[in-house]
Image 1 (tube, one colour):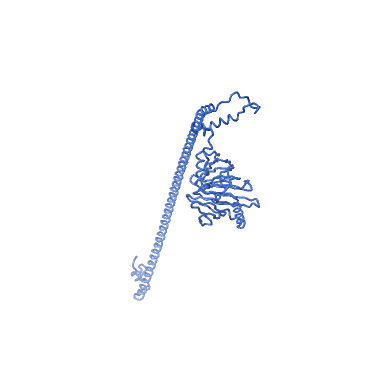
Image 2 (image 1 turned 90 degrees about the vertical axis):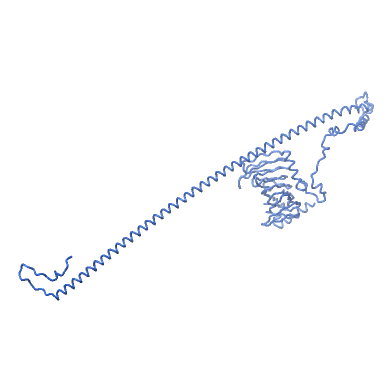
Length: 457
């Protein structure tokens, strides 16, 4: 009744809030936080869980969330889970659930029925998707090894490997007490296998470490004693043993009274006459009680020996099975270690090769850059040299032109000076010396004072 009231209350709140409420925390142990809109909130009992909340549990911290549709989600220690989508509208027959496990482990108890088409309940990890109809299962993701693991406790789970955002592998179906692992680095999903005995014990231990008894059918009753809620019930081993085994393990000296009573009852049950029971065969002689007791005592050691023999045989078979399981487990561990070592070496080799390739590219780029710089420097030097030569030639040409101009000016000045002197000399000659108008005879030419005064060049 309490669960129905909680479910109705949560559903009404969910309808009022527009589908924002997904459930609430009913059990919490240790430190568990909710990351909501960038804010970190410590989880307490009755804390409301909203759609798009991220639940993060610390070491030793666990929490059980009772969802609005009575489904249960148990968060294990050191886990990070996002309530990516939780739509529950029973009036419209709409149920769409998506939980994302970034790392760690959760257990889902799906009490509602989902058809996988219109109604979906999915648990996603970075490498796998687990789709269910109505079941109990665990889903976990190892962030270091990048391996997802799904274990079915009740019902059936369809597990697919995520290739990319749009592609997935065909599903594999995990039945009760089976497990499947999905490795992100492998191309295909391995086939489900049955849980080993040590894996079953480990699962039971994990459930016990949650701090409360895990019952997929109902939540713990508030009025129930803590011992019955927190500790799993252990079946009585005496009830599981055969009656013959129990009788054989008891001392023989403690059994005469019970054997005598059985013999007496046997004697009383035998009809004494045919008239009392016509269907009974005729009895020639009734065996005395003491002889019956002796026969019972003689039969008991033989039965005890058979029981001991069967027990020893069963113990030997179990020991052999356990030895085979240990050998198989060791072989699997060695194979896993070998594969991990090989993958590590391959990755290391690829990293070294990539590093060498990067160094080679950097060296080539550096040499090319240096060559380009040297070529640019030489080009610049050549251009500077040509410019200097051109400038020097222009300066020499200008100097020659200036010298020619200067020489021309000096020559013109000398000519002007010479003409001036000649003019002065001619003027003095005209004023001072009076030249005769003609010669005395035709054989001699009178000497002109001007020609005598002009120097010969």
